[in-house]
Length: 157
Length: 102
Image: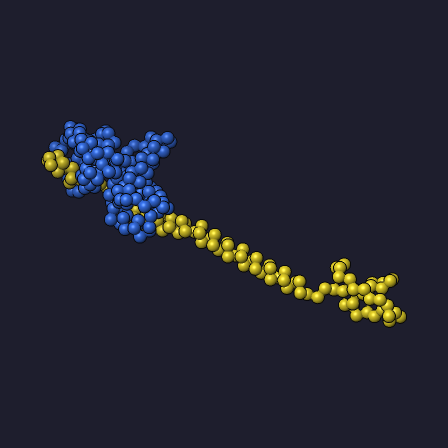
């Protein structure tokens, strides 16, 4: 892929790409490495995908999946807390920790969908393209994930 | 959108490390130059080999034009013409010019 095109794509999608990797790995260092590896792979690739943006997300997700698969062979790493409260109130911070922990108990698909839809502001169609699934299936993952998350998290504590 | 989803939206994902983007840009640049490097090196190597070949051929041609040392051979002694020695006492001795190197 051309250098300028890749740089431009990364510039406009850097945060979301990180989010995709983070949703899969739940580790900052692994997510960062996954994005970097994906960029290098794309820079060296001679393929010209029809939709470079969607392709970029897919490559990042694949690299993230590979990273956790490789890491599980050696260490059983605990997922990191990756959500934070935007306010300083104790209740909000506690809520962020609870949501982070509960997200880890969801299925990988449910967790990815929730993170990408809520925090990455990606549509179900876009998420479906990244995950190689249908928008209806993704919507179903989202609904079930939200329901499971709501059961396990209390906002009043 | 439910109230719970709104609450979720108020949270934020912990941002990536500060050098995340700068490192990514640095990684793409070397990848680009690496992908072109083999072509550049192959071209450079071809040029050097070609030049070396030309120089070698020129030297070969040059050495062919150098005067071949000749010897004057008499029946008893071989004198080198380049030494500027005369053949003592034999003015009309037959002179055989050898083209061989010793």
